[in-house]
Image (cartoon, rainbow, N blue to C red; front, side, top):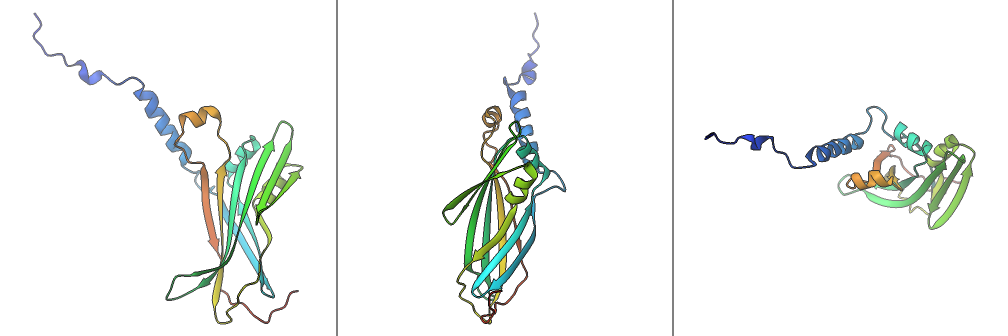
Length: 204
């Protein structure tokens, strides 16, 4: 008669544990950005015209965003442009701001590239002849006007541009398996140097 104790319990694993662990590791890999290829705001330029500030900026997309668009996955880019008054002893003051929402959609089979822009409640749609021209437009803030600035001649100001990318849709299988993956892909920002506004400056 075998009186030894059964010690096989340590080999027992709940069903599906390997699959769950694999999906968890896969989700972590998807959340890690590729080294050296992150999206970034590369340039901000501005000028004063009377009491208006006109801003231009450019967002450089990383390779993943470009590959997704080339594969037909739509993207939404949200730009936030803010004129901020710098304060030494108190919190900085938001003077003027604007939000631009751009949606980028591509159909590589039909070679259709459509972008839409929403600014101050007005929606505009554009068609592009190729992916590169849509990407250039989608990453650009062009001649954005911040109007009727209450100018403090002695005050110091700076401009902050932020950009956020969101996935508009996920493939059904990926969405089911990785339901906890956030739709936000990146959130970057850049600030200009401090400058003063001239109340006597006229439009060119």
